Length: 116
Image (cartoon, rainbow, N blue to C red):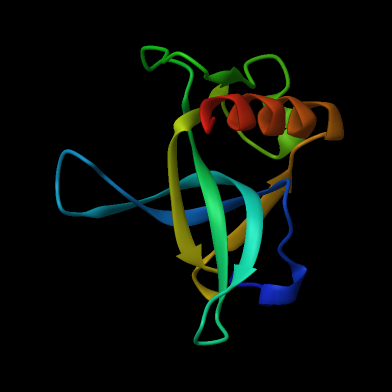
């Protein structure tokens, strides 16, 4: 189900077509919305961070959802991959859940440190 753009906000977990660095393709996967912006074409763009299975090898800066994945609307233990950020049009996503406020605060703090 695709939901209206104005319902998406920072902290939402959405399913998005996420780009791969290794190959020129997209894969539907969960992502965390960290910001919503309007483009010059008046299209809402979402800045999102990749969410991946915690079974994958960890990267520096990953934020674990292993103990709280169900609280976020996810079905398996995951991590938020701070190093993988992209933008997608809001009309191309579907909402899955939301990150609890304490975890969203941790993500924002970690992201801010990485962007310095």
